[in-house]
Amino acid sequence: MLPPVNLRPSFNITRAGHVRLTVADLAESRNFYVNALGLVVSDEDERTCYLRGLAEACHHSLVLELDEEGAGTCRRIGFRVSFDEDLDLAYAWFRDRGLPAEWVDAPYQGRTLHVSDPIGTPLELCAHMETRPRLHIDFQQYKGAHAQRLDHYQIFAPDAYELCAFYSELGFRNSEYLEHGDKLLSAFMYRKGTCLDLAIVENSGPALHHFAYIVSESRDIFTACDWAGILGYGEGVERGPGRHGPGGMLFAYLRDPDGHRVEVFNSHYQTIDTEVEPVRWDAASLSTNVRWGLPALEKWYFEASPFVGAPQIPPAEQPNPMSLERFLLEQPLP
Image (cartoon, rainbow, N blue to C red):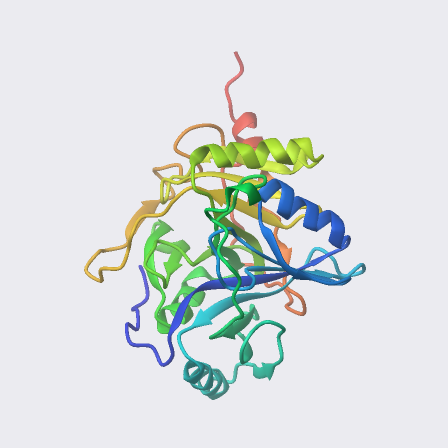
């Protein structure tokens, strides 16, 4: 069911690092992420805002870029590598496979490499960033949900197995996966020793379904929802609070002012040891939506932030998830 994993890849990706989003109103988006989620501003100017979680020492994990005409898109998702020489190895690795690879200048980062995976997902690799003091015990700085650190991304891909095989060659391992019969529907992949850095879900892609921040306590998830309501973003509380099937984490999904989806959740389990087998979930016999509660709205399964310059490819077979709308239609009449 799962492709083999290269446990000694050509270069070493260590974790999900940062995401770059386009927004229509920088002040409005800043308000959402600072006052509802609780991120802190590292630096900003009239067109860009760099944010990080309270427990993060590296300069940014979220970059908001003003783009009045192209707002609502994702420019790139970023991964960290161990050393500068990993960037040189990555450059050669992507070029040898006919995939884009170019050096760029990125503020507050060291050497930075832009590459793309086989379906066109734009990636940004770097080994170093400027640092700022961690603020996780500066409780006077706490706002909103007190988001601590960026954890993972979920992307859509037209063929989950093929893209899973690509990232497996880069050393990504699976903590869990969702299948139906002999078909892989979703892969939950990681590099940093918890259960997720990159989730791949079969759907029209590439597209960014969501990015996720860890919070310290379960009550912070409710706090994110409360502050979203207080600040006028209550309709953007799209799903949850709930508990995932895979992973078992408590969660809530919120949409920011431009429609980007961000998850707040409370924990992960450890996956460092190589002898631990991935957990298999059967889509036909077990609801993987939530451990309790109703399914998500249909838009949660299909709406996502497009990547700049990356045409979306539909899957061979369109997904047919159990949405809230479908669930209600299939209920027997009293």
